[in-house]
Image 1 (cartoon, rainbow, N blue to C red):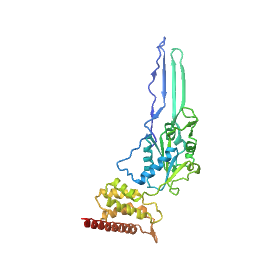
Image 2: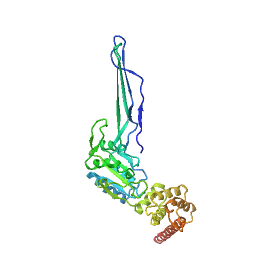
Image 3: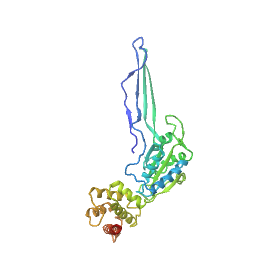
Image 4: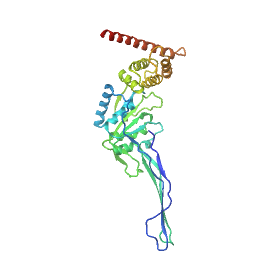
Length: 356
């Protein structure tokens, strides 16, 4: 979600003031400029899509998270990419029935990008010519303060989802310390209402997600902030959940989804990065396979080509004597998984014939 656009209204034509006409034909005119207002709301109400998968594993995580939030604590979903942190955060937030404000961490953020800042100036000019022989002019110029998303969530009691918050610099996130501990948001005196401290709405809740610190572009989180969060470490989803997701996101049958997921899970234990490939790679293979009306089995050249292309970056670091073993390892995994699945299929059909 991008930052809200600001619609600026230009100086209008002079508007005669509502006063009776002067005896000598004089008049009074007022000019105003620089009025700004948000072009769209920044809150959303998340709803599950038709392809959202709810398994016992997801239900268990959701129940734990809601328990902590009901007590008033902020949540922190931590884990590698592709483990469903953002999707789970949106799902948990939707269960609260409150609007959601979404922020994506950014290295360029400062505290003002979370709290608010000046967005322009308001200029007014009054020309008084009520008495024809006397001209009186008054001008005023004031700054316009615009609340940013954290302030909006604190004021209105929304649920804040701060996705990949550790991509923002720690000093930018310091503003969260008083919000999560003392339920007070410190504001500059420039804010239009003038208060320096804002008491956080009792319905305000926060869900933060983060990637491991060794990821590129990720900053180390200050201990003071982690101490105010309840952290749930997320690993990769269980096999049944990944199969259900691959089927829901692509439309492939269960047998094809099982083969794709088993290949992905097998390759995770290979090489220097045991977090990849993620379920995203499985979804990509399943979608492309469904588009080509292929089948996840040995001998289907389309399936094997898709696997090699999608899994290229995930196994590129597996080398021997300077040469990549990517092609051999992916092909070996495809052969092993598909052979085992074919054997299970034959055994299942044999048992079905015996029952008949």
